[in-house]
Structures are given as C-alpha cells and as structure tokens.
Image (tube, rainbow, N blue to C red; front, side, top):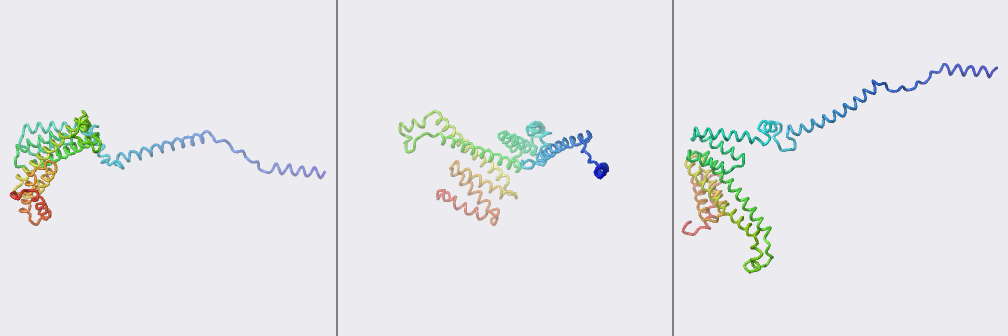
Length: 293
C-alpha cells in the first residue's frame, strides 16, 4: 500500500512539472528575412566598392588627373582628348584671320592650338605669318622664339637618339683600326652606314634648328629695345646663343652672347644677373681672337 502511494505521488509530480517546449523551426517569414538580409549585404558590398572606384575617378585620387571636371571636359570634347574641338577652333581662327589678317591675338591662339596637336611646324608658320603682319609685336615674337627653341630641343633629342643607336650597333672590335681594310669592313655594312647617315642628318638639323632659334630671340630682343622687357630679352638671347654654341661651335654664337650680356649690363648694371653676366663675358672672351675681344 505504501508502494502504491509513492507511485501516485511521482505521477502527480510529473504531471505538475512544465514540459520543455521543442524549438520550433523558423517560419517562412523569418527565413525570407535573413535571405533578404544576406542579399542586401552583398549588394551593399558591391555599392561600396563602386563608390570607392567612382571616388578615384571623380576626384583623380592617385591618377594625377584633374578629377571629375577633367573627365567631364573629355566627355564633352570627345574621347580623343578634345581633338575634334581643337580642329573646329583651328578652322574658326583660320577663317577669322582671313577676314582680319592683322589680329595678333588670333595668330598666337592658332599657334597654341597647333602646339596642342603637336604640330610644331604649323605653329611656327603661323607665328612667322603673325610676325610679318605685326613685326613689333612682342607677344608674337616671344612666342615664335619659344616655338623655335622647343623645335631645337626636339631636334637635340632626335640627334642624341640617332647617335645612341649608332653607338649600340657599332661592331668594330676594340683596338681595331677603322682605317684598315678589316676595320672598314666592320663599319661599312648597310646598317652602320644607314645609322651614320641618320646621325649626321640629325646633327645637321640640330645645328640649323638652334641657329633659327637664336635668330628668333635676336628679333625679339631687337623689338624689345628700349622697353621694360629688353633686359629679359637680352638674357634669353645670350642663353640660346650659348646653347647653340654647344652644337655649332661657331664663334658667332660667342659674339652674340657677349653682346647680349653687355647690353643687359648697360640696361641693368646692378641687376640680379649682373655678376653672372660679367663672369660669363670673361670666360667667353677667352675663346675669341685678341683682335675681336
């Protein structure tokens, strides 16, 4: 009887104890929510990457570009860097010059457009025409001198490259007399002869280009005589003459540089470049015969 009472109590306690609920599976709404959350997270990653990339393009970070303004300008001017726009402006300036051939500003603007297209010869021809129509215009003459100098610098690069190409394919053995029969055979092959001719032609063009640049600076200095810009023009003339001397070896360049420096000292004897001008004159005079000093 006692055993039956104990069993009854255990049964009653089991009935009164709360049953543990089984964890229900996520409802379809919850599953859809987490699925959407994962998809949105992926989209956000893509959007962040896109914003980061667009930031680089728009603001020119790390690219050296001018940013979104430059990109928009390229967009409106065409994918070729505004080539079509430059061409249309060239045609417009040419038409305006036909109607008004003495307009100095049109010549300099047209020359600048040609330079943007790397057409230096056309830029020089334009400025020469402008100088003919406006022989005293310092802006045109200064731009013309600069254009000739840039042309000379390009010719110098071409000459240096031609010489380097010749040196790299010079097959003569060390110590071999190039005047001998064997030595001549090593240096008379078609490739060497072609490179020699190219190097010679390049240095000839270089000498001519610097002579033209020196002449252009001389014209600018002459037009600036008596003006506030003459001192600077004389220094530029002396500078280009010394550069030309390196490639022509002509005493006329020495004389031109000396006269330009002396004129500068007459204009500004206590100027910032006076001491250097005096020192350079002494050094240059050593190259002249005593009768020409």
